[in-house]
Image (cartoon, rainbow, N blue to C red; front, side, top):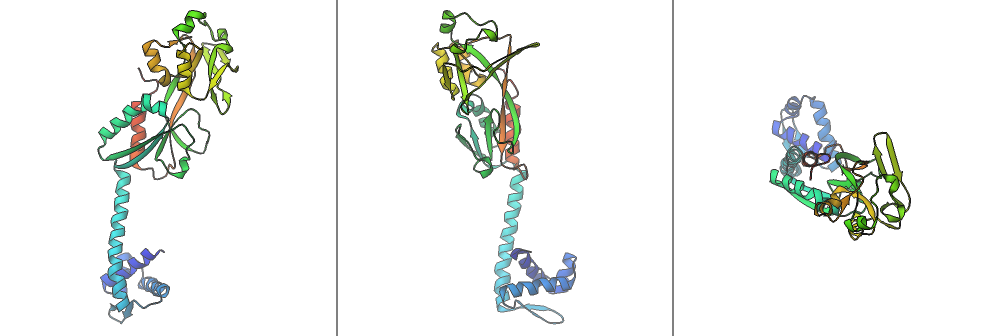
Length: 298
């Protein structure tokens, strides 16, 4: 029992006018109610009620405790109802964390359309590629690209992003375009590095498969840098379509090995706890899943 529970029993007795009346209203025995009041008086070291065979009366201390306590109980009930209602309504503040490049290319539009759809939502979007301690509760939902390092996290898949093999027209003018992944020269590859290791390039076509794991001449842990290096004609690169999309549309980059299938990377919504997930969070994830259906057309 909490102090609030004890206070509720005192209010119940006073409002009912007797222990028996409070007991009948709450489907317990009068002895059980009397015990709760005695425990409350013992904890406070003060008598709150004077008892007769017919009725109970508040002492001076009891008057003060009852009237202030009843107001506090009313506020507590209002608070609990508002919190309970907030879970069932799509309203309040959403704190979102995401990768800058993905937010700029694919995520901003669906986030803004979610705000338009739900006018009672406020949103705080933080962009960074660094480690986020999701369990700390600093954010309601974190949008992450690729494999999650912590398998204990709670994550829902949102979409899958294809990886594009591409190079600049200038590079293609100076080198023979590869007809198969086996034609790729590691010395001419611009490779993404994750946790200090170059990410393997994987291709498949029917029953054929090919994986390139060699260390390249230029490596970086930032996709935008690799894109700019490729546009400048320094080699062939593999990158998520959302990073390469504008360069592909403008012709600054040209897709290669288009008859081969490359790997995809997963986009996930990560959040602290599955239990008591606020409705606004689950609504946002559902909205993003619908807006960012796998391999959306560009």
